[in-house]
Amino acid sequence: MNGGTVLVRQAMILALDEAERILESGDILIRDGVIEAVGMVPADAAATADRVIEARGLLAVPGLVNAHMHSQSGTMAGFADRLSHPAFMWLTQAHTSRRTPDEIRLAVLLCATQMLQSGTTAAIDHFPGQRFTMAEMDAVLAAWAETGMRATLGMRFFDGDFGDIVPAGAGLPPELAAAAASVDILKPHPLEALREEMPEIIRNWHGHAGRIGVFPAPSNPDRCSDAALVFCAELAEQHDLGIHTHLLETRAQAEIAARRYGTTTVEHLDRLGVLSGRWSCAHCLWLTDADIARMAGHGVVAVHNPESNARIGAGRMRTPDMLAAGVPIALGTDGSGANDNLILQEAMRAAALLHRADLPDRTRWVSARDALRMATEGGAKALRLEGRIGRLAPGFRADLALYRLDRPWWVPVNDPVAQLVFAETGAAVSHVLVDGCLVVEDGRILTFGAAEALAEMRDRIGSLKRRNADLFAAAEAIARAIP
Ligand SMILES: [Zn+2]
Image (tube, rainbow, N blue to C red; front, top):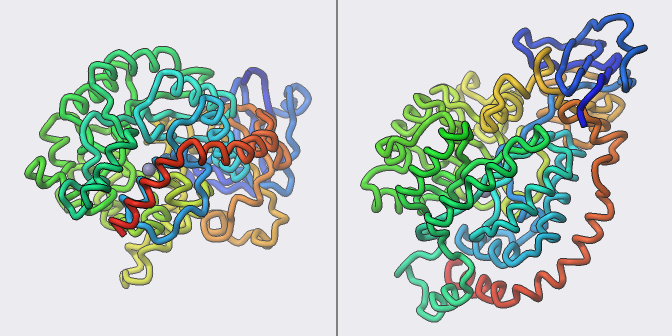
């Protein structure tokens, strides 16, 4: 699939390499999916390359990494403004439950279309929102393989309580508690089943096509038993995987942890002996100073989702403090229910802007370069592909996007890093390569029929909503009870 040589010729190059090189005009030679040379390439490269991409007037940038998204929420853009987190979570359940394998595939294609066309080449899909079946995991993984993207599936599970969205005795009228229980979708996944299923999914899919990864992925540590968390750590160690999770997205989750563990979730994970650089944790909003030091010490990756956090009012990650402490930070959009698009340039911009108004010390601001580093190097760390993706440098996998410099926000090119973060919306992307394969050409996706997939998804939505009418009714009732 990625055999042969590709020459990207005469591009402006933002290498994001150690020397922070920006080349006014240079070539990129790719062999068998790996970048062989950047800048000057052998004189006969054009004559011998299997494919030459003429890139004069285009800017080559490493593909961006969306380190936290949910493919199942891809159809939720524009959903319900100003909802509480529990109400939002129930609405998400109503919208994403009981999908067929075909609908799971279409949702992946919908998300991949948006990411590829805006220059994102890799993602972590934290999937699904309910107890998974093997057929669902096969469907989602086959769909990611089909897209041509580099994707890691976080096998999302919980074997405990969803206490933060069904607060016991927190004013939920009995009839609503009964309604929530009767819809019967948030069934815990027994650990005995996970012990059988997860290794099988890893065996079948991890490393598939050189682009597909599989990580164990607690929905949230405090929705899981300690035994399940230990199992994840052992599994990750055994197969050399990452572990992906949500962590301390809401204040309610921090309070549950305090009651349950008598300490913070981060300290609990550390005491349990499972905390390590294998973890990538989405949100990380309600951290103490000690938690931040602990995460930095272990190299735990925080996946910042600035727009989602603001959209649902969950809180604000302490990015300047975490950068200063040396916590590795990646960037995510989160699912489209909590943040309506999967445009990572917008997440970069939000990450860079979020703290400026109330932080007088400008040296502590998140710079454009910091934000871009989160979306490249940070994402590579989250995927456990550090040193393999995130740079245009010899030896790195050829994941890159070409941006048209004739777009108004690129005229003139003043500072490629600042313009990519502050001005770009993904709309200037014309070509995308993943693992040396051309997957987007002149804005058109080559790996699957994007227009057909979108049309088919649009056709399915009505039946999906009718199928889950009981869940939507329960979600509405819960939204009224927990405004
Ligand atoms: Zn999420």
